Image (cartoon, rainbow, N blue to C red; front, side, top):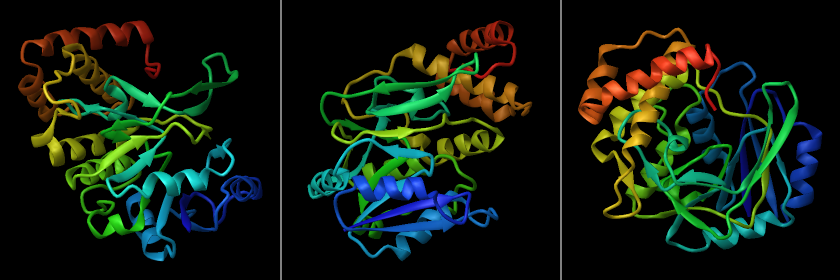
Length: 288
């Protein structure tokens, strides 16, 4: 009934995770582990390969550092995706995408139904739980866990022609599915723990520009007609982009300043000022 697809840094998943899946899913399933221990694939290529191999009508894409806390979550996946108007479900996302190069988590409001485990600056392991009271329609979605019908991949695919590496496969797929007229939801009845935080390296920087170039004619994007994305959201996102360049010692190209002027106008100076302040205040620490 459900094909679970994982792009793995190892030849196989841990026995503990396989047991966790078996004990919680509640429906027939197959596990498709794309062995990427030799970095043969980008995640786009790995997931497209997983779609080809899948035998079941429902597909679940997941990272290998997750843990399921909901019983019979597979029944919930099937119930949500049985609605022909629903194209994609996940556990974290936003209702808007911003005008500047950025990802879903830069936009507000955000919807999250998940547990996030991370190491605090003091070195302590912490877990934060965020929940939504009901299913929430979103535009961008996070790739640590999401599900779709296999049939929808007759209309969309993971765009390995535009993107290398391991970033923006999730938001790009969501934009494709949205463009086909389907709804995307953060669901409220499945709880999964993600045991790491995302990271923004030089590969992420390259990918954010590729995503922007592909979708810039549709940005900013929103599910709410007439909604104006707060000006400060775009300023902060552009500041974070500059700061990510700085953290990775990655030169800021002329293209970045051109985008900043086109999208922010006079607020570009504000974004640059906040960026310089952040460099002093955080002293090369990642922004949270």
